[in-house]
Image (cartoon, rainbow, N blue to C red; front, side, top):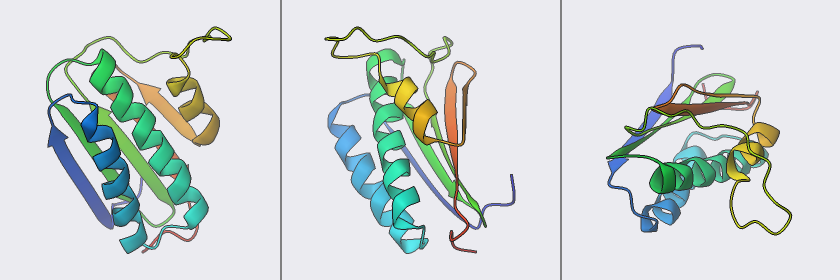
Length: 128
């Protein structure tokens, strides 16, 4: 990944109220970085899903990191749960189980090694 030209980080306790706050903060940060509107909306959605996943399934403090480089936006969410996030088949009427599948569909790449789940979005217009 190219050297980050802009970065944002927040650490917080697992609380579902933080999901909305992280969406708002992410949107404002990406606007300052002049990230394209389409990519920014995908990134905000991914932040919402990954932070929610960490709040519900994670352990301990959560850290959100967003880096904007010349042509890529990277989102990383860490907690202290050693179990990696996995793609699930959600039931037709299930209320959960779609978050990582959604991140997989909208991002250019993603991975989870347990404590960290990250995804990347290509953006030729991201701030340099």
